[in-house]
Image (cartoon, rainbow, N blue to C red; front, top):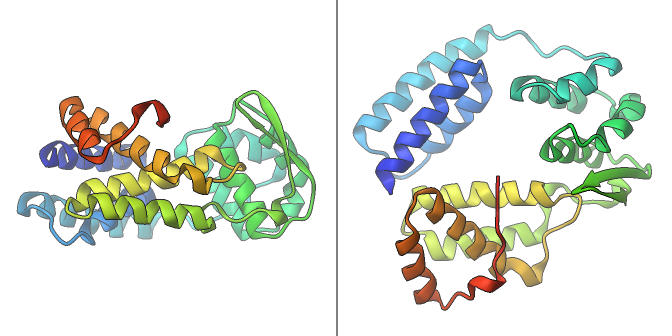
Length: 238
């Protein structure tokens, strides 16, 4: 499992570099360098990437304020364009973009996780306006100021702790699982994680990871050891 993990990690970093998404590449590198153990050869590659990224990020253009009419197109663009739009919104007064944001939050052509991140900017800025959010073909009416940040949900902390309890002997696997937990929270937002579902979230994420590695038999053994009822789990797709 670990060989597959490190191979995929280095491939993901290389892809981010190729796409010019240097900030995401740096996040991946930094997260892995914080781990208590990294194989020597992998560590060498990570340190090389870190040196390259330090140079590349210094050369990047400073953040510029985008015009309201640019917002929708950037959110529909590639990861870097969407990320730049989100950074610009966070640094500006999002209320100045409210007309465009209303349209974006109901636009199914914009990935729902990107829309969730836009909504989170409004949460951060305590925007007290009633807005509609399209999710899975239905409209959800929300007031951002009344919502918690995605990462600030108490149930998310419960989920992280549940994963840590089960996976702490495999730090790399645990790290991936906790990233997926945050992804799940964004996937569901503006609906919030439910306390009663923590067990189902936990084992659904772990099953998803085992399947990603093609280790179905290992999952079955793990599930049996934990007495997991698979009929109660979620079919995740990220």
